[in-house]
Image 1 (cartoon, rainbow, N blue to C red):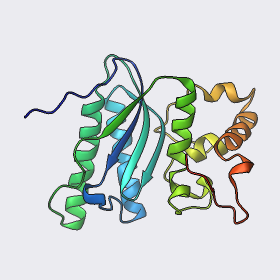
Image 2 (cartoon, one colour):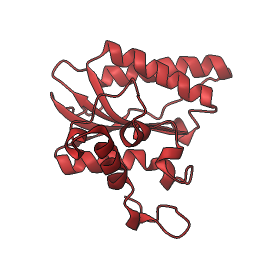
Image 3 (cartoon, rainbow, N blue to C red):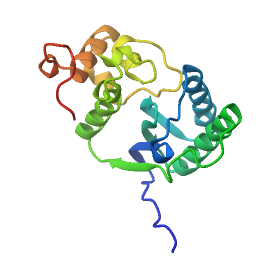
Image 4 (cartoon, rainbow, N blue to C red):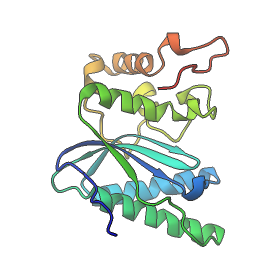
Length: 194
């Protein structure tokens, strides 16, 4: 029985998730994260996909992407993950599936959901108790928006420019938006999931 065709709009934004097969760790070391980042940079340059937010977790990755009429999101993800699979197989003498089937995607229809999706993506390491704060996790887009750390794979979030008149105002507003004070408990962990 053939698969149901994926619904990808000709233009718009999507939240994309790729998971490791059987929740397998995709990244065993910092070197693996850096390799995936390098592959992402190369494939992104060759395809018409914009990346606004991302987070690489040990067993899955998140992207908030923008597509245009000439975009090939499926081809982009396929090339990225096949390239990383080849690297992983060679590096660890691994055989079998690395990725769990097709990637999942959800169409983002409005601005409020766009902001919430970016927030959800960047708070993943905190919810998984891998970091006290998203600023403590190097493999996400949070440091770019909240602290001005340049990230060459990112296209500027289209709503980020509305957060302030200058870079400092935007960064402070972004920090407050992602981690409002009322989400913290006495031990500084985020207490409520999205």
